[in-house]
Length: 272
Image 1: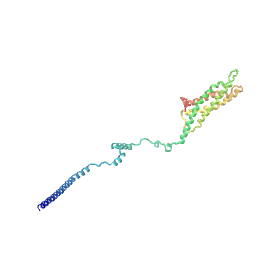
Image 2: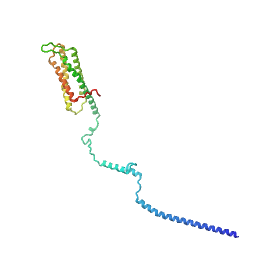
Image 3: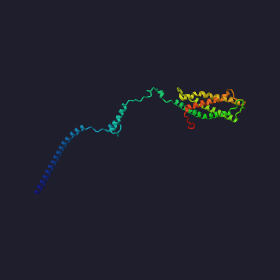
Image 4: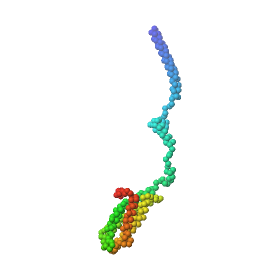
């Protein structure tokens, strides 16, 4: 019986110990929860007051919209914006073609006119080249002219020119005439530009055409007349006797017209 009572007392003491321990743990948890709630109440107002004073961080989308590029710094964006404002504020001082009196039709490119200018330039270059080359047989014709003329004055016997000298002179004269009219062709049939009048040296060059042009017609005709008189054993007389002076006047006018537009003369006709 004594042993049973001892065991019962031990069990009662163990139960009392467990109950007191459980109550102590519950009280400690309640105390910890109270402390945490008080700390949270102290921290939350502080964070809310500080967040009201500090600005929010800029969003990347807002920065890209303001600067135009994501990798630009604020200083670069501000500089570019300042340059844009200066360009917008700068007045336009350069006059336009309309301000100068040109109509839109006049400022548009004219393909037909450009083609005409190109053709005219080409033909006048050929004219200039052939004109310089023509001076070679012309000078040679003038040199051989006295050798193709009969000699004899004041009753002296007439010395007829040799057939070789006469034929050579005629050949040079024919070559000069052919090249001259070929040269004239490129000037006469070159496309004309409307409302353009020659001035200065070009005008003198064209005015001299009225001298050496008729001269290149009259001189060969007089030469043919002189040739017929020579073959008939007659002394050159009448209009045929002016064959030489007409040739010299024609050559002088032709040379002057070349110098008027080509001085100093540059011999570049062999170049492209």
